[in-house]
Image (cartoon, rainbow, N blue to C red; front, side):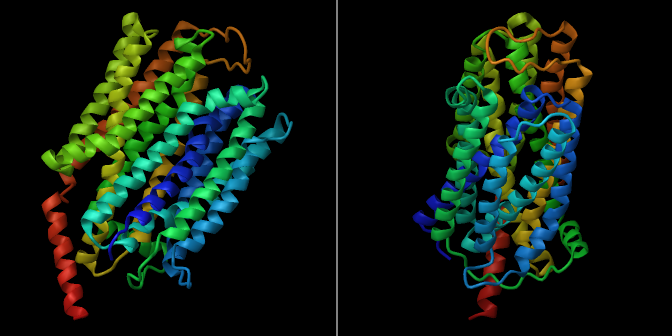
Length: 462
């Protein structure tokens, strides 16, 4: 199954649209409903966690549905199309909330956000599950993972870099209106990108997926110890990432401060997004040849933890208003995250072959459904911690779009800095310890597994 350039490009374009949608929700829902619409941070965080955990629990069912799907259009593409269209409508509803207050707004937010998560799952699991079905060559799978994750980083970076400035430009003085218009634009781009991906990427018949129940799904995961270690790493890495993405906007608004805080935030996220993409496209391809994937993973974890520690040191040394220093420190975090994002996808794809060698069953939809399961669980817990943390440190929201924002107390600012750095460091340290002790899928072993499976296939189908 040869991977063509057009298929690779189409897969990447799909990732751009998909992660534009996810980044808009993951990075700005808390800010939109807490800071702009006035809901309590703990309530918003609680609903976000409940919704994402509920949605994560649905992921195994989605994996099973995908595994059982057999149509003339393939196993994955029908879900990609239907999930994309539905999610685009719900995304717009999420950021175009009607003029409700109190209980009405709380109900609207709860229902719409849960629907957003469910419809996103419909397209996300089949998207990543396609990788082993598009090509059976480890190198091509690695390249497709790199392209997908890199382009996903591009989509995320576009949202991180341009959202607040675009909101100001399109909102006519109202951030609330601006977010609704941005959501509409992003939804349209999303639909176009996924339809193009579905039209170009061709699936190959890779045999029957035999998993038929949630219980068997978890048994399949537990049988695959390398998938479990990768899933744990994804949980810790994404938990750190979502804590950062939810809190950094508050840091720039209330700690860095100033009338031009949005411009400074945009510069920081631009540098971060560029470094994340460079980490995927340049640093990873260069270093993995010299270090190998497993060694590079450990180096990247160390760089990310160092970046967080430097940000905290810069703030407590009284240099937190120095944008250049913040960008340099942030560059380490984002570049390392780019590398880690690619590597976890590569490891997860490799664990599919490992599982087939070990049990005789290919369970890519099951394995990749666990990726989305833990990403959503991590983001749910992270945003809940964010909501509780914002209320505990006493942060006072301010929906004003002009002039000086509400000043925060010294203890609030200290708490904000600690939340944004220490908690991510702890999560990454857990990932590092378990990976060093338990992960065994080195580059050479992955190639050996692929060669063995290919030989078995040739013997079965001479």
